[in-house]
Image (cartoon, rainbow, N blue to C red; front, side, top):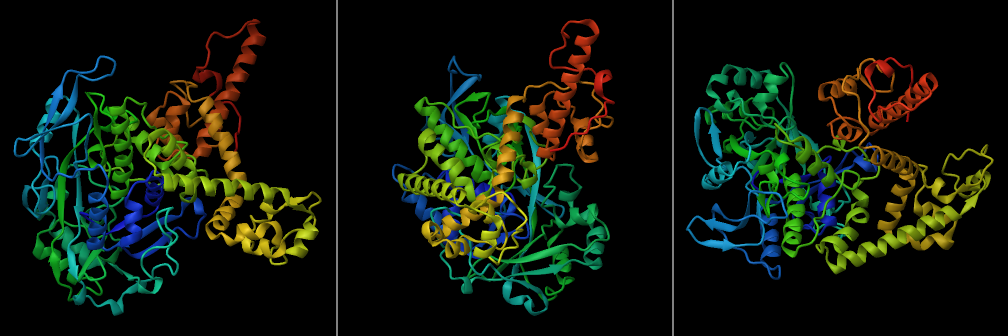
Length: 625
């Protein structure tokens, strides 16, 4: 963990669950190393809950190394990679050459059937503190120069990105008594589907604290911009996790929140989330001293910025294999992403496909309709990025179906059968739970009574007795007041056994709440899938058409000018409803146009799937979903 001591969050927690469903390690290690577990977005539905945890940096490293070093058939060799071994390409695959191994810093060679590069911020990395800069991938570590030059010579399109890290503070010099305390969840939710509980007792978890910036902080930053090369650089930084200087410049006269996060149970280091800055160290100390609770805080290490090379991810296929060099895979920040979770998601897919490539098997691809991982990789490989890419729930078209709770149902069986990456233990556990879910849902649907009877059985729920049709137990479970435990008390047989299995009972509640939404969204998924190739007119005026589209969506459509419905779905920020509304608008007007043409000239129009602006841009059709 080279930067922040936390995993998960909104959107990122989904990625961790999916990595775990494919038997990736980070979720299990977090369950063994966390010191503060919290589910974010609890005020909203389970589809967008964000599992998050503060991690003990030392414990995480120990547990991860123990797991890796004890993995059968895995050899670990610590060295710097300076170059690639290349050979003639395979004739039946795209690419100018084929990788056959790597050359290490000492000149030794390691031969391989596939190679995965996960270079982080090390490709020609440069560290910035104030006006000073020096080559480094992170503070104290040398950058990778030779490998960067090789990739450029091979013809890869190379860009430059930047990120930063905050100063570290001594815990025993902070006045926590004046700060806003945030407790961890009383019953921590594990990241991994294999774990029923995390390693730490709820009462032993550490707290986080919140403080705020002020006008003095803003003034110091404004007065000293001339001493900050990193901020003055035109290289793009992370939009959604910007430096303190960037926030002050972008949002002037605003107060910004800072989170003080523990780095471990036995650590005296506090990580001030939101305080990433690259001012000279003495000015960083001045900024810290202006903040409530930090007036006497001691800075253990200054914040700094890092600039590094990344490769345009549009040079990759959906398997994360390079189109230029056969059998060469990329994952993580080299593809323009930011964050541990995005890197882990790419890493597990690149690892799976590198293994499948050597075995001569077809690649393992997750589509946008199957997982957040699919959305992440599709965004990168089709749209590319010009700023560090971060996962959000808003990027995902079908959020109702792609929830954290059902990642195992979506991916584990595929991972076992198609990729061979899932253990027998996990496969058996997932299969058992899937069968139990299907059985329980069938039983809940079969239990049907009148609203009057349900009202007598479960008086806690505000069930309207005016309904004349029979209502199933699954429908009753949708009420916020109703749980499986409550249903089982009302109808012990056959519901008791389902209610006693806590994980199953929780999953059933979520399935009940989302049943109608998922069915509706599944129809939309199929509708979009069927018509992905449907062409949109090049001169379509998105501001004039009378479809149910927000102004923001119209602006995005107008600036991107997508050629097909499939391309619309890949524009960041376009909602599922907008895609369906536009699709239905186009299809309806196509039918209307064809009918008019048939009526007018008595023969079919030759125009196929493409329509001119004059035909329907001002048509008065309102579509809803």
